[in-house]
Image (cartoon, rainbow, N blue to C red; front, top):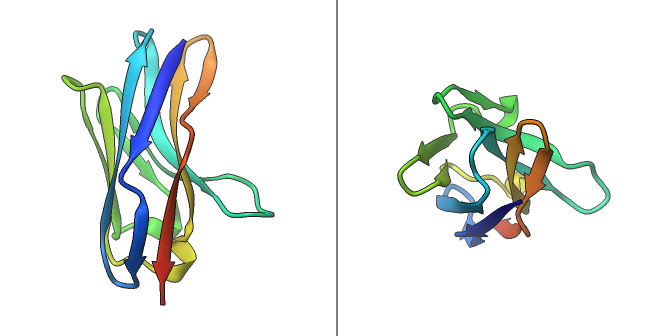
Length: 116
């Protein structure tokens, strides 16, 4: 089992910044990649950004150039730096870890609200 604990969500004005953190614990060996997803009520959860253990990153088109995902292997923690936030970034943000062969693990989610 992998436990994921997110922190760093909150309320911010449009144009502002937030940094989300996700600390992984438990059986973290064989995690292939970690990432962030977000979900608003009535819509499917969508990918925001992922990072492999080797440091390769991937971003949704909607956040490219504004968000940056990074990891600290020594702390088993992944970060999401979010800049130039827009009201449409408002969502519950979930940390994800994909482990071979067990599959996906999810955090409890953290609310990000961007006011206009």
